Amino acid sequence: MLWRSASPSRRPPGFIEPCLPTLAHSLPASPQWAYEIKHDGFRFICRRDGERVRVYSRRGNDFTDRVPMIAEALAKLRVKSVTVDGEGVVCRPDGVSDFDRLRAAVGRLGSRDAFLYAFDVLEINGTDLRRDAWDGRRKVLVRLLRGAVDGIRFSEHIEQANAATLMDHASAMGLEGIVAKRRDKRYLSGRTKDWIKVKKPAAPTATWVIEG
Image (cartoon, rainbow, N blue to C red):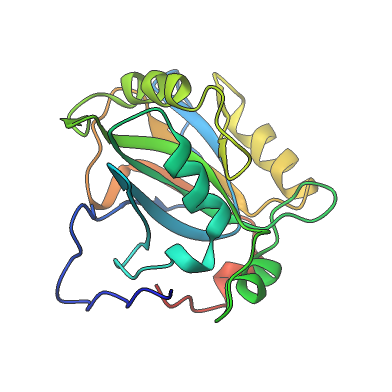
């Protein structure tokens, strides 16, 4: 059954507007920052409330039936409720996410090739974690995803890296870019300078317009 998309003016139950990084030309460099790969995909806010599972786009539209592996993995987490933030992707054989493959995969019929790189947890078992620092939320996310099935994978991060070298390696590997996140900051919906994004010049999502 295909669920109806939410109206842009009405947010669905349990949906939290995502935190959006500020685009910059270079990464900040200090111990206050942690660095994550910017996976080339669709931003998803994933909500589990009892047996009810939903996968929302960044604007609150319902993609649940288009990404069945993500929905099934959420349903198997050992929690009563949870809200996870992450990037839905489809990867090439070399393990690098491919936006064009994802775009084709989550068309009208959906695909079992798409999975979630989870990088934040906003609520768990009725406790709102958004006021907690990024460091604290990451520890909760690590515990949450122990034993998770293939539809959800933990998005790794790097600490105390040389920012310029890190960006060079990301570009050489064909990655979309890097997101730097303040380790001591809470989760804020909307655009924030607590998260800084640097993209390689020809990243596919720089030219495609994504509905969601």
